[in-house]
Length: 294
Image (tube, rainbow, N blue to C red; front, top):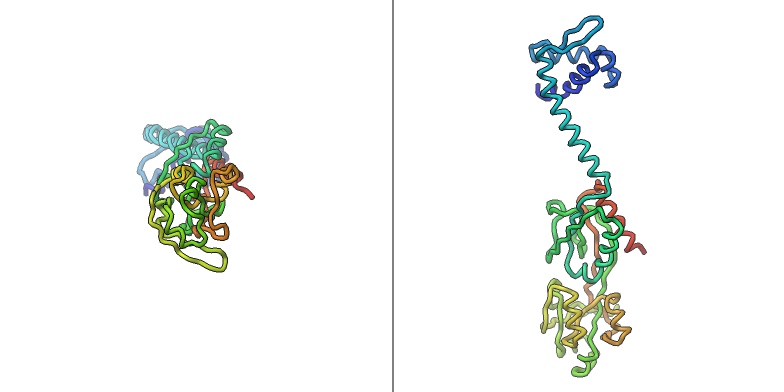
């Protein structure tokens, strides 16, 4: 009953506005007979007369005017809500909620986000650092930067790049420790580890694969802190080649065991909970993807 009434409310409003069944039917895109029949059924269900009808005029009864007054307000609010949602999806402004590991910001995404803020000043960013993966199906974020391959199938994922770390040390450290020749030599050197990877370093050189169980001298949740201690000569660390390249060229870092990679090969993905994105989120996603395009 209530659902039928809600379906008929727009008809009631349009007839009252046009004061004509034929004009109202044209505006609604339905036949005059269909409109008249549905209004009569509405009156029958409610047990009241809503319109006075004659050959020239259609006027609201007192009950019809009362109902229109209440329902007109409801329709206005529904229209406002509809327009608000549509505008929210279409306008290039508002808030984009982003989640990532801190070290992704330091090592990969700082410039990307700063460039986005400069290009779209009407779009706000809310950036949350998490030290563990989030479930985008329930988390209060629009997008998340996720490392690894275990992502729920229902989510929308865009791969940005693949990270493969290598071993590095500062010349300051190599003044005190001999250059390692095999992965097992790392047991004799202080090591700096990223906490989420732990102290088991899988190493491979194409034909061999070994796992080195290091005893961390230093353990951090931030890649940037690992790099700071690495540059200061406090230990050996795994670092992404692109991140280490400037320091390696400047002589501040030396790559160890150059035939071996660190083994922690993993993808960095941009993850969304839906393909239906507001304009502000779509602009953010497109900006990020453009920065990492091949």
